[in-house]
Image (cartoon, rainbow, N blue to C red):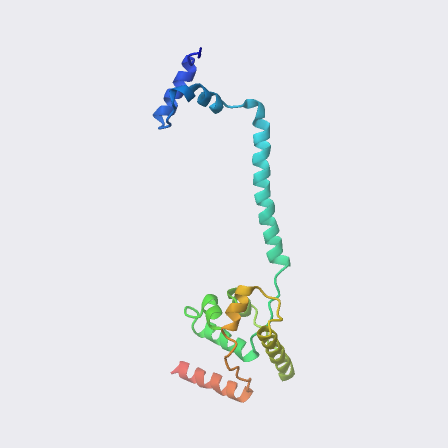
Length: 187
């Protein structure tokens, strides 16, 4: 013979039904018992909560340390003249040439573009510029031969630019262009 639910159980069943929870008569007592709080295991639930919270904090700390100290060193694929062109575009039209737009138009990521704009590197001599450009051209060769160790999505992005013509840096021409642009801007 089945025992009738106690008045406390009936009140709980009624409260559940008012909240829209459907309870069959034959499952009522079992449902009420399973919904009872188990205060003997509160410490375990709290420990589990702390572990989940701390794991999130540890994961976040791990990501911050990794981003700060273990950055991926991406190969340099920009010649000196391209870097100067990027700096000029971003300086002349900062609203149009954002790091994201630069990343779409040049073989760099948005992070590299931000770094390039934030820390302008100026080589001391023409020899250093030539070494820099030779290094960039070697990296292009390695990229085309698939020997660069970079993520596949980045490889696809960079290969979009693999057939472009890279103009050599001609100081006389570059100086004339800068002077000509200064003259046009001042009018």
